[in-house]
Image 1: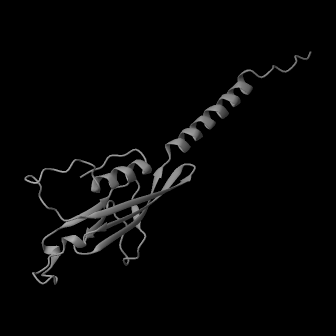
Image 2 (image 1 turned 180 degrees about the vertical axis):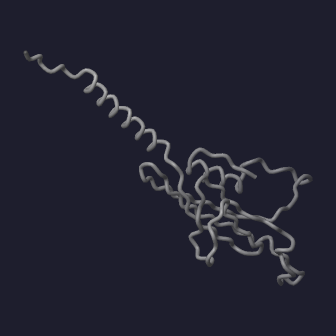
Length: 161
């Protein structure tokens, strides 16, 4: 599933709404009991004029997906029943904040989610700042205009005989 967004706050809001939908509950005949999965995404943006540094912190609780026997003891390998991944596509790549060894940077970053555990994902990525780039373009246009005005409309030197 792809969640479209325009900024970090909108991504955080849409992503968190995805796991806590506010849709009406179906009737008892239509209800299928699904395991409860709790999830929370936090995105912290820092503005560096032309670039935005985004730190994403995502926690998803998949403990409800573990397979239990009748006496509530873990049964088998839950990974064989569920193959879930979280991928983060960014324009300039991203890097994991947790140390996982000498892994090359990849785009997209991919995490294999582990059923029966709380999964914590943490990464940093950079994106261009439209506001900062627009401001820079306006400053350059004004500077070029001032230069052209002083060069084209400069008073002519007095004529000497």
